[in-house]
Structure formats: structure tokens, C-alpha cells
Image (cartoon, rainbow, N blue to C red; front, side, top):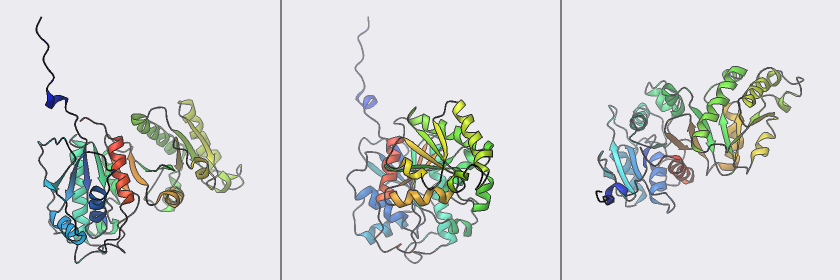
Length: 342
């Protein structure tokens, strides 16, 4: 009998997750909160953090913050054993600038932020990243640059039609049936067919990382959830049939609940996810309780994608006063949910 081979120390060494971070619009607070989240908090999990952006933009921010931050050029063959920061340099045909455009929308920064994000997603789709964290972009800047997607989730849905915009915090979890649509168009999405597909997609997604844990609480559309048809028929004609069918398929789902109480029913109950039927129905309540700690989580993808739950904050960009709490939470959630092997 041949003697057993000793395990290889390199092979058995725990691998750190590779977490991509697109630094967002150079004129917003994205670069600032990215550096603050990674460098200013001791509770960021060990990982290989790979930034996607411009060294010029980052160096401007590092200088403005008067901090030391060691970022290495990205090496595709590297597999560091300790927390490591590297940069994938993204060149844009329109040079992004921060110092003279802080707080302003522009096609230059719109194109740059899109290219940062696009490259990070491309690497994740190829299995080279386990998660992508996205700092805020400006939808107006994307539009000025000719980018026809309205935001990160819409771009992801181009590849993954089941992509779902959800918002995650310790106090509340919300999944949105629709997001960046006008209210009129959002209401047109409330059909039993769309709801049924959404419930199934949401269930499949959360079962991937925490099977059997979550219960869905569906919000009604009308005041008092329609008051048995007195205040609207959508509940009886569209929402209730979709919920009943989902239950027959084995989903833990209930409702519709009056929109003014459903959030209270799920507050501080970590196993409950509220299904909101349009953007502001879910986000007003969520941001009331978790503005500085909430995370935008994209479900329905083969990799994890998170983001802070706020925007570019052009009004305070360049002043060094941005709170990095939500960005730090986005990084931590990405590390928590990402699988630990490619």
C-alpha cells in the first residue's frame, strides 16, 4: 500500500472571497464611501477586494481625505491569504474627473461609472468574482452618456431576467415587484401572472443561500388592501389568486396586507420579507428604519450584488462628510452571502 501523501499547505490554505467594488460616479460620494468603508472600519471581513475605477479619481480622493491606502494593480493570478486591495484600471474615452465636477451630472462621469460597473459584472459572470458591490451612480449622468439602462438592476436584468431589487437590513427586508418605473407603469405590472412569476423567482433566489428560512408578506395595492372591493378590485382579481397559487406550490406566503400595516408586521422579524408592489411603497418605509445601515441586494443572479441604499449625494460630494455606514454594510453582506469558492 502506498503511503498517504501529506496535504499541500497551499492547497489547504483557506481562500479569501474575491469581492469586486465599482467605485460609482466620480462626481458623487462613491469613491469617498468606498475608501472609508474599506479603510476606516475594523469590522470589514477578510477578502480580496478588487476595485474597478480610475487611479486618478481614487488618488484625488485619498489626497482629499489625507489617508494612507495601499492599493495594488490587479493581478489575475494572485490569491492573497490576507485582506488585500487591488485596482482594475478602467480607461474611458471621456476622461472622468472629480475635483472640478464634484456634485454635478456629466456624460464623462456617467460613461466612466458605467464602464466600471460593466467590467465588474463581466468578471463576475465569468466566475472570477464571487460578489460585486456597487457604489452609487447618477441615472442622469448615464443618460447624458447615452446609456439606455436606468440603473444597475436594469442592466443586470438584461442578462438575468429574474433579477429582483431587494433591500436588506437587520430590522426590515423588502423585495420590489417593480422599481424604476413611473407609478402609472408600475401599477400596470400588478397582474396575477406577473405576481406569480415574481413570487416563484423570489423563492428560488432566497432558497439558494438560506433554504426554508423566509416567509413572504405581500402588501396590498389599495388603501385597506381594497376593503373587500370597496376601495379597488386589484386585490381580489390579481393579488389573492397569485398568492393562493404560490401557496399550492409550497411557498410560505401570506397577504395581501393593508399597505399601512404590513411593514409593522415585519419590523424586527428577520425571517420575513415584505413584497412591495412598487418602488416607493417599499422604500419609504425601509429608509425610515435603515437609511444608514440598509443594503440594496440584487436577487436572482448567479453571483451576489449589493449596494448602499442611497444615491450619489451630489449635494455633499467633495466635502468629506459622507457617512460610509451603508456602503460598509453592503460590503459585509456581500462577504456573508458570497460562496467561498469559485
